[in-house]
Image (cartoon, rainbow, N blue to C red):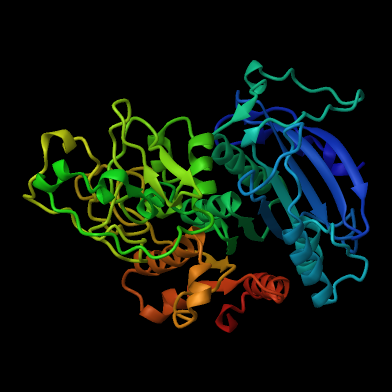
Length: 479
């Protein structure tokens, strides 16, 4: 048992939402990767417990001082996963192979197997302490029980939730981030996440920029509301003669081929993991909304789509009980990067369609924002000559990894274009928007160097290793 487990300094843990009074060490093990793991169960205010794991490389002594290099790891979450009969997610073998190949390519350890976890790979490749926040989303896992020797406060009744939805992952991530800041006190802190974990990593980059040095996100989900841009409305392709006399003219669809392969799983996940449609407009869940508007209005219910072999592109259901229509671009085409459109002002709309969410301009915002507590250097800010200033802060280094590379590099390859996913488009747009919104007054090259794109391939692990090592070594000019 490590000494700091019972150190009085760790007796009180402050989270963003509440004061945490106790914590419990649950497990500790030694693996083939020679990494040491410890798992803690921490209360998140009055909203139950969340598990965090601390992984240290074997060559770092237990008696070493507080960790100077820490990477916060955020798992991909339950999306794109299959579940067994007990509701437990099945491990993704492809991701395991990528990490196993990456760790072997770096030469960090010859004992790594295909079951190598991302935490162990990150710890070995970067010689850093890796803290994993096992945020709660989806079916609740069987809670680990504390050892009889360790006493903790009774679990709140709210911990008996069978299925977790947003904003639980956000609260858990912020709690884990504060726990690292309070107890490990790293001099260098990075964040690594994929899918939902990648979106949480970008959320931290835009809300906790002063404390972070580098962010690496693999296929992050940046914009939940924009999924409807890839779908069509049944009325858009209607050939009913009664529709020919409508005042609104509809252009024929220019779609060729099926929708992106990850569209339907993302639509299903959106309805499953959000309590209401308006919840996915929260910037903490869709981090691109920190930097621009959503480009559409919210509605009371989730849009429902017809999918399957007969619908290569999801089609919005039209019924008396569900009259909301899918958001559409002027050509009903697949979403194209930075295509920020304006709603047609003065266009005639039938009374039966007056409730349809119209497509609005995606207005770019400045980051960091102005207002209230932003840019205040002292506690007294309401004097007669005091104004509200702008917070002077620089975005940490950000790298977004995509499986199908950049659209610009693959624009001439139709086969690769046909395999591109929603997350590929969102990742590219996120990079573009961050470069334009977060570096006002600076040269264009500064933002292009600060926020970059990478590719998930056979050199992925080596690229992640070099990225974090360069960021931690403060030789950022070499990136």
